[in-house]
Image (cartoon, rainbow, N blue to C red; front, side, top):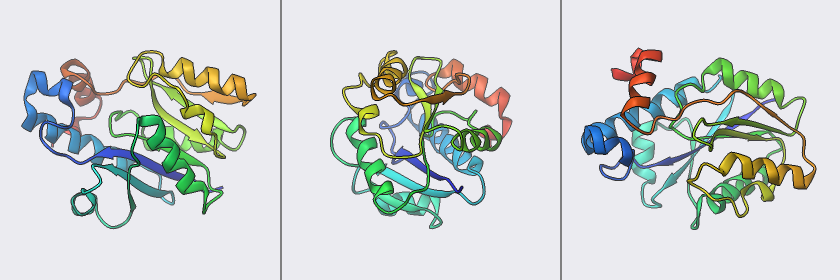
Length: 203
């Protein structure tokens, strides 16, 4: 069973990415960090997976292709909150493919090739795989088929995201698997820990 990755990304524009981290290290350096994190994440996607880049703002298509290359498909994100944007990306994928879909961002360098391989393996046994973030959100959500409810009425940007997602799955009677929580890079301390774990992020 093949797998597809969908990355929800912002264009790497100063002042618009890693804004919490920028408070400590400045907007120029925070933008560089964002670029390295995204490049690292794409480099971890297992060979053979399809990769789609869902970007914002909508006028950033050429910018994203110039940055990340032509090996991926590129789609502007839909309007609305994160749930609307994720739902739109999910619908786009499953309209033409039965391949399981793995949602990623560019914030968690710990989603390594081996961990993503473990996600794909779990998807053979269950319909949904969740990798929580230690802040209460999630770093990864993988779906074997479309599930609109997992994106509906979620308090995005809060510590309740993962728990609310679990509740939607319970309400739908959907079994899921979880891997241990991981840390997103959002501030100076989490960035320092990521550099220790992955020294190549500094290059």
